[in-house]
Amino acid sequence: MLEILINAVTLGSLYLLFALGMSVAWGTIGILNFAHGSTFMFSAMVAYFVVQTVALPMWAMVLLGAAVGTVLSVLTQALVFNLILRRNPDLLKAEMQIVVGGIGTASVLLAIAQHYTKSVPFGFSASTFKVATYQLGPVHISNVQLVILVAALGLAGLAAWWLKSARAGLALRAIGVNPEVASLMGVDRSRMALGTMAAAGALAGIAGVLLTYYLGSIAAETGDSFLISAFAAIILGGIGSVAGVVTGSMILALAETLVVTQLSGTWASAVAFGLIFVVLLFLPRGIFGRKEVRRT
Image (cartoon, rainbow, N blue to C red; front, side):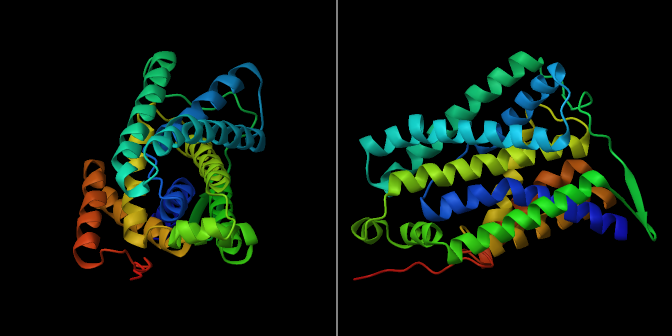
């Protein structure tokens, strides 16, 4: 049972790294980025091709994944979402266009990845990092799992502190509450949006590299399945809430792990969609979702 719990927490930590930036971007600047999954996968793919040429340690691979994810996410914001918002400044009316723009960007990245990988799973066997397993009493845990747990909880804690204490974090939260008033107070939404998307892309890149180390290999389509799970975790925990995405990721991972071990892996996606349905039915704002502020 402890082994199952550790595996669930590891999976939840990967969901957390992947979904954290997506949740913050959605809850503050109003961008629901459906290209996030492809950014996650593409970052790992670039790291794979680099390590085929130069053997790199894990920390260098993680930094490389973060850098690629940052660049892809910033380019998506600058070349796709910003152009949409310039033509339609009303974010509420532009929501569907942003979703379609994200799906289109994801399709392009997926097609490129499928072309260069021939739709064959890829991994980091050429990396200098070697997986080791430690026994802590009756439990076995690998060094990859330890890195994932430390990275996820550390970055989530840093994000929570930054949003609550840092001046830029408070400005970003102000955009999420009332963008018009925030703009009048001197908050530059475009600059904050680029920074937020950059951070979200970096987290996606880190998650992609760590997942590849954890599973041994991933495929070009892995980002799509992870996107569904991340969406479920965000809805479950509450959009824009760091505590919410932590809670949602862990609950979803535990539910999926129990289903996989007791039934079959084919039910994992059904669990994600089932949780989305239940939460929307009984807790429309999620566990930690904030109430909408309306002013008359």
